[in-house]
Image (cartoon, rainbow over all chains, first blue to last red; front, side):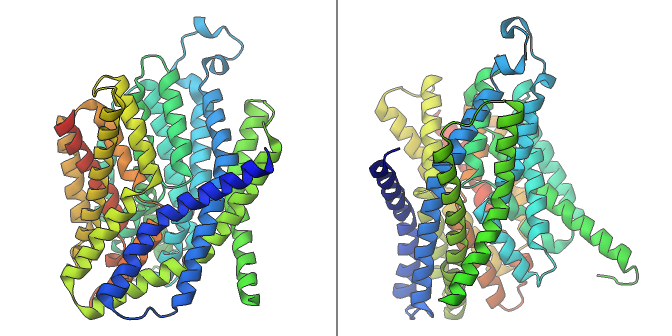
Length: 264
Length: 245
């Protein structure tokens, strides 16, 4: 790549990020000055913080566009390629069963886990939750359980695309489990668990996972990308709710075991 | 200055740790499973470096700018005690941050393309742009409503699970009536609304509100805004599908 092209791309992405941040900044500062009508404490610090966010997000997005996305898309394509799936056999003559896609499931699991660990908004929520809970909710405990939930969700979602079950059965079954868990999980974790469903799927996870889903729906015979290709993100937002509640139940059980005389 | 550098260095170490799993997974699949050489090694390395520094600066800016302003505004609104303005702010924040969300624009355009291929809508550029625009507006409107409802919930202290379970029921009922083609997109649209800038802001807003109103627990009442913002788009997009398709 030529240097001028690189600089052009950096400039373009920065402008695009600036355009995304602008309405948010306008709303925030507009309400601050027009409605609250009080000077913001640490005004310069906040503005500098916004500049850091802007630079950071731009660099992050450029890097994703250069390194992770092309590679992720290419791998999703290669892994769902019938020639690869059928191994040395002639691809056309072999009818693939759902278990032939094992590399896809493994890839879905690992990439779901890995991208969730790197998801900036999850890091943000974990920092806040740790702060608010006075340290009783660990940053890593939360991030790992969310990542595990996403990993399970995406690999199950891939299995669904391969076998072609309707998505709403899975989602509804998931809802039932979430409702049942809500009844027994520690009260403090419930809102946070619901939130972790939404934060998992932003900058890093969505493009990679969407590519995997669409690639899979295009190669598996009889699948319609419109009906089957979408839906992986829904799995990725539902399963962390369960895994975070399960994590809270587990830590509560362990704490009770360690201190049997203490009641909460 | 020195403190800033030390902090940045700490965040950088954190970013390296956060990104290692992705790199390991990709290398393992490329080299062991697919057994293909990596294309454009140079560009890849630069890209990874950019991601690394980008994440570091973002986290730094988060603690300097986004968290403090979200919280200080929540406190200011709570002190001012003007509920209508707070609700208008909540709606504007939800709508404004979503309507410009690049992930949403991309998904809406993609959905329009697929719907045109399936001959659900006309394949002219105008028809596709209208459809994508309608999707975007329904999602942005639904997120605005979600943040508004969520803030109202914090003020009143209603338990979040009633909203979520009620919303789930609505989703299940609407799934039975919505056209098949919209269901997958509707379910996914819940996930794409919550961007990297919105999440920290909205979280800080919720936690800030809950901790400045007497009798609210920031853990129980402060979280839950994101959950609502990921639920309402499913309902609104299915409604949009039922009307348009």
